[in-house]
Image 1: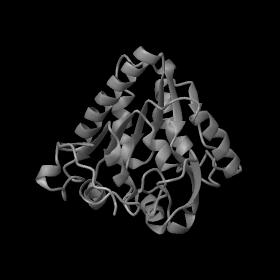
Image 2 (image 1 turned 120 degrees about the vertical axis):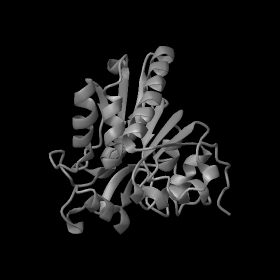
Image 3 (image 1 turned 60 degrees about the vertical axis):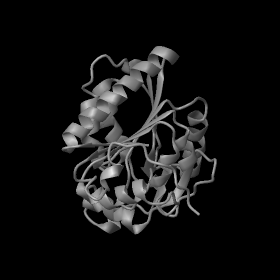
Image 4 (image 1 turned 90 degrees about the vertical axis):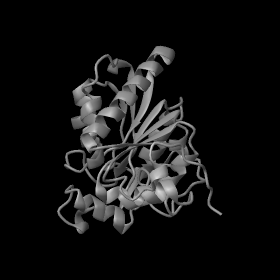
Length: 257
């Protein structure tokens, strides 16, 4: 995994968007389309803003898959990740091919139906973040590193739910759903390229654990270090706890014992 550190999250978002645009263009050139996964949440604001302003991306040939969604939350709710994707990606680009997770429908049926489509062809590029507790998508610790199911119905731990309150998506902890549909870890790792966007000081400890600690289900995003084509974009705040040698480097793989 290549670690890249920038002065602030605006510079981070711009650089990550440039890499994403290049990857999208190349995939469309070679395959005639680009199948992508897009994360949601406050950490993705600057990146998606920069990405949707990139020139020469043929968005008509981009196919979008959703990473995760709350169970029981209608699309009209401000915290709905479907709503987020429409507002910050789909409506800004004119993407017409998308497969979203309807969290207010039967979650197992949704997971199975969208999962079949997800596995129909390879994912070219995944845009993801890292949670404050090290979660990847909504795979909270201890994450399931073994299942081959494309999507899972998961219980959200309190740290994940508190993060959503801290980002002002909900007024209090009781409003945050307790379950979600999440792409599995193994499914996410099947993407040909992964661009990880993680700004802000509140993510610094999670970043340090993911980059410098053991690869462990207790720190789910640490598994990204096993991917052959993953780039981690940080700002100086999220990178604040990293050792100097961890910056702008390819990290070795140290698997959990």
